Image (cartoon, rainbow, N blue to C red; front, side, top):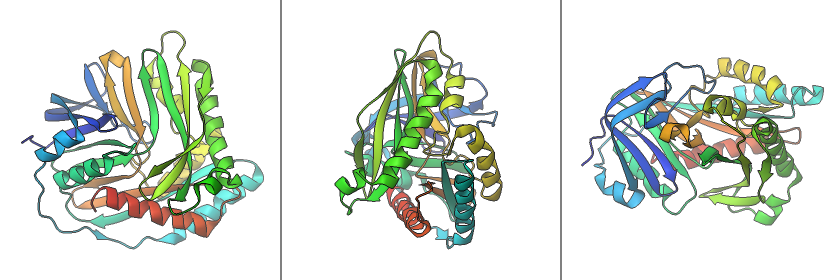
Length: 338
């Protein structure tokens, strides 16, 4: 059995993971053959790269038997407080009316107390990821960690080509997908994400858009448009991350005005690594896989947090967006076996 006292995990592709185990170290540089990448949302923490003494690749089917589940008590969750969400919704609608913003992502943090049984959560993640287009990620040690399953690619870089996606617009899987694909509010929200990504990446090369489609992730479906860029000349990873993150799918649009709003919101509800980039850098930066760190649980000691967000535009309805928050929270707990 693999020693899971401390570790890091990332999907290299659906149904294949890279596991880091053994001795671990946080550092400020990425000068290693394989290095995991776990910054905070605002890319300000100094120790954002994590290395391990042992690296192994597995399929989900290979890794599940390595896990020894533990007995543990369920987490005691506190009721969600809707008042902050309601106030933030009203405030952001004022910014839409004034023309300061066109889109913003509100989020709440579900909080509770309990001990995380890492093997149990990993098994649930693996089982959920079987035959689904999702990406596993996270890190942990004896006192703290983060584990999640994301539907959203921030960037993949292979042989000078960057691939990403616009992922915005949500419906339940019991709703009509044709109606969802043609819903004006959902299409407007999705187009703002495309516009933001194009603006961020255009200095690095010609941006090419794929076809819009609806992709199912268990209980929910999202609108997704693949996006590619052939990177011109020598590129540096940090400027690419800073340009792309956060996309309007997790932040706000326009980005410049939205950054100030995001920082004020973070002071009200600290997000830590919720929505931050997560990934692995290999071959001296020539191979990069990064995802958007959503649908996760973060913990330190016995304090646990799950962040859940929803995209808001001028046409959004407060009650419908709160229902989306509730649906995403339920799905996240289910994915992680919580």
